[in-house]
Image 1: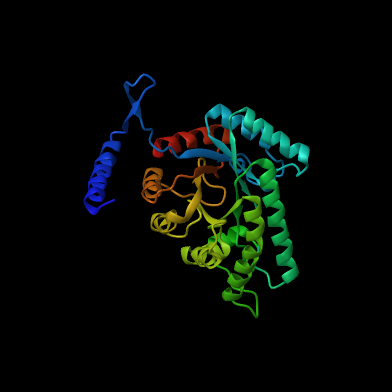
Image 2: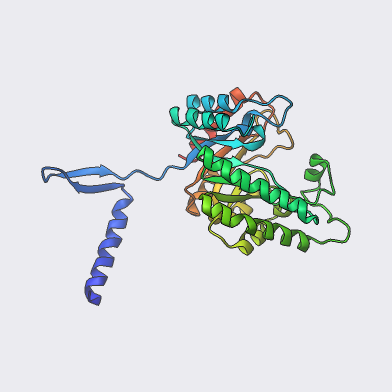
Length: 316
């Protein structure tokens, strides 16, 4: 192809791109007529975490009921909190999968807990094995991704006090934060081949500990440097201005957990502008799931529905 023709094609493609702003395409119908078809805008899907209905109270809120609620309210999918599951028995897991499919609900994310921050190699191995087992569990559920934590030192045992300290903890005596980052990176790297073989993406969350800061989160993410490790953005887990931090991380995110706090937060309350957050994510090209985590004290039956309305309006 000569240069002049290539330039003509580029000009033609540019004009076509401008026309796409009107979201109208011309196609040829079965009888040769021109058919005008609308090119639908990309729609960010909205899911709900089972955590929205259960904040680690003594009695677990049934995941089956969350799936039913999600279908009734108009969510696209459900994120399952692993600790909320009644068991890992095949019959239980398969029933969740069957229910979700029959109601038109995606099971898009399995949110698990682990802690790779320990000088004890055998303890880190336990959490590596746990992560691999949960990857297999995600396969059985049909979840394409799992939530990953870095873990934390635990030198402030009380979770609320750790939050009050801005997520910062002193290292264990005789160790440094550099040790913790090395343990975490090495542990995730041990899980990467298993994730790749299973076809399950691990999404590292800004979930306190080593990932309290953007720099800490990106240090782990970039050191692992694998397509099987992505980032799960939690809109409520930032210290200080969330928007500048969201802008730095949005390009790497595959899932976004959207916090709301109706009735006041269980741990704290954030005033989040979801129209602004939606703009940040769209500008970064985000096309994944936004997963509601309603972390307020108001009854979930009311607060989840109100939260969905806020997110639908913001991400419309």
